[in-house]
Length: 399
Image (tube, rainbow, N blue to C red; front, side, top):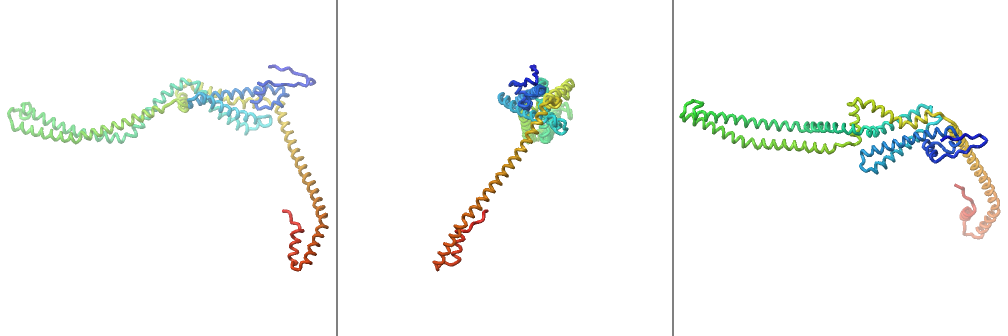
């Protein structure tokens, strides 16, 4: 809104609106001093708008951040508003320390810049997560699948030695059974071939040879049956142990799968992985980070680059005047206290002197009375008389 310029003789009296006062409050300006600074009114309104923009951005960013870790929507809004208020307080403190007389000092400006950059970098993360939400959730699904594979490999590595021992033991036992079964099979085939004339002596009817081979077959078959009875339970136990290990791996894998989520840190990790693998996103990501960082730095930048006007001069002179007045008031207060103490000392001195002067005669008379009483009382010693006089008539020192 354009304001009319009054002549000096008209004694301009500017009354800011509530909105303007609010912007001035955001910019940490004193409205009593700024009202008469025509040029600086607009400057500090602009600074106030930059602070308000940063404040609203911080509130929205923090609200979205808490929505990734808190399920209650009302709690998200409450926490977002709370953290936005903290950012507002920090920004107002930063720009309050920048004025005509110290904004060119490197150390304070550097400190404020580092603080603003730190806050800005963190505040940019929730905004980027919101902007790339679809791409991030796609990357999260890929990352979670890789995490499942890594978890399974870790579990397999934990049980690898145990499983290898069990498998080797089972293989050894099974080999013993297979070898014995081969012997039985050879003996059986030899017996059958001898009986039907297809093998051995190839003569049907050689009963003694056939019986010998039959006994050999029966002997080996009995040994195989005994070995099977001894080894098969061991193989079954090994299979059971392997099944227990496999079940434990599957159970741990299922538990791990339930822990996979799309929380804030998971999304940040997905965003980092997405940036590494997606070249189209990299340049846009850094550009957005720069833009969001500038949003946080807007109040500091605006307060730094805008020229100093009459308001800063009035603030400096007003503060200097108040310091001088405070110093003079303290000196006057000290002088008044010293004067009071001196006059009180003089009055008390005069009073004490008058008191001793007026009581001198009465003290002497009382002393004489005590001495006459001592003369008349022959039983009282001189020391007793002196103790009575000392107790009743001598003064004590003040402590």
